[in-house]
Length: 138
Image (cartoon, rainbow, N blue to C red; front, side):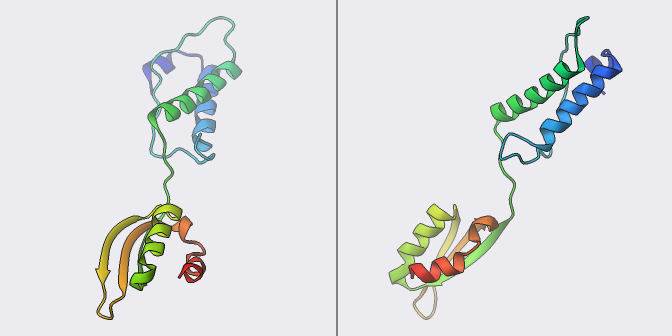
């Protein structure tokens, strides 16, 4: 437990914890929870008119500001894909993977039958409906 927090009345400690928990459960990035993070109270000033609601709000705001200032990112499932196409359609496939799917292209191979194979890592979320899109564009 933080030394600064131990000097604060229990009622305010509870309010601070509620504010931290609320902010961590619905973070600033798409309302997704903040994971793998710890909070440390560095300093606190308590006055006679300090209210639990004010401390709860301050704790919540501190988490949002820290997340904004340090940069947050969305954790999402990634998948490795292999897309085989003719050389004529290679540009369309690469363009779609790069721009629409935010793929990291790993390798471009030439298959024994002359087709091209694109190996990439892509967010699973962006691949919903990809087979239909691929058929439409090739």
